[in-house]
Length: 358
View 1: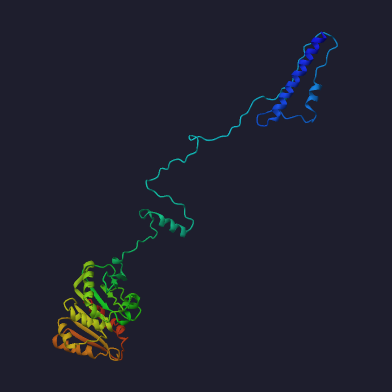
View 2 (view 1 turned 180 degrees about the vertical axis):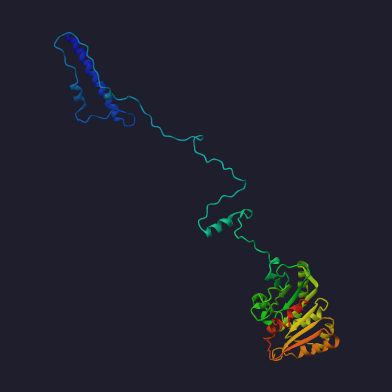
């Protein structure tokens, strides 16, 4: 009997130690253990289990020893494997397809007006928003005084005055500037006192006529050298504007007045009338003969010392013998530079009205 009790005791102790050892092993493996936290006491584990060792009864009869361990102290012997989530191709988030129009360009929202302009410039031309409420008027239909490229090799640029609401069969005035307007800057023409500056300032805002003002290059001596290009320029304008071919007038001041005499005599059938101001005539008699069928109104200043009035007076004298359509106005006390304002701006004389056939 004692022998059986001893064997049972040894088996009980072995079983307890085995359970303790398993708990220690799983407690030391941090990655695989879900063991219950260790008790607050720091006494050795063996000592705790020794206190729970069942007593040996006084009698020799064997007794069944039941060992019950509280459920909360039994370690959960469940192995946990490491798990790292990695989305598969099916589970990876994807951006939903856009239901946009084809070939549409997406741009970031601009934060300023400058950025908005850069964004708009980066768009294709057909997708750009219209920034201005009013579209730009094409050069060929713009009203008022506008700069133009002629496409010619000598008279490359010009001013063109277009009346408001232009109609068909409107008059054309061709103005030839003086020597100070030569060059490649059209502002040289309007910078001096003369008919172009009056147009620019609005003095003739109700003028019902086109006005062509070509610019002579600096290397050219005078208008007579480019008479053929001026003729070509006028013909090109007649093809693109509603101009009355029978109502084209020629006028100019100083060097332009001299050019009015010479070019008017070269193309007498082209111009319905001419008005040279402070010009010079090299051959008064032959010039008068060529202009015998053309109405002429000349203006000179009595005190003009730059281009004296004598040659113009002589030419008008010859014309009066050939025709009754020639006249001259001598502006008493006027010098060379006073003539334009006294001629063009004088409402009583109404030279501009005469030029358009009024």
